[in-house]
Length: 170
Image (cartoon, rainbow, N blue to C red; front, side, top):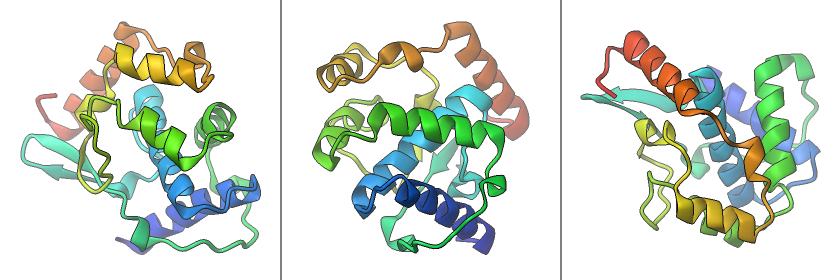
């Protein structure tokens, strides 16, 4: 992983540490949710270097072994306004959940089919509305779904943007 990616990933980890989260698995899941939601809203992940082109797809890869928890001071200016917005959204919606609850929700996302593997995720599957099973699980864990809902027109515009940027048939 390039040093710039590690740096941004370290900043995101430090951000969650500053919120009081010290479980590396939970931070990895929250990081995944943050990157997923940032792409859905703004057409890019927070940790852009975790994405790579593979044939006709863009793959996202987050390996928990690539980062360690360092409780050091970081400047808020190291994150963009949209990154802080999404990190706060994800923390407010999912921060109170434990690893098992997060896993229960995330495993119902269309990219996983019940088994979570963060090392090779097709990001085109992020650009659809949450399936009913995911919505049911989020409601079960008191996640406010209305804050995650994006219109089909918005998701279509992000898909079109990614097609134009990466010249991929999503």
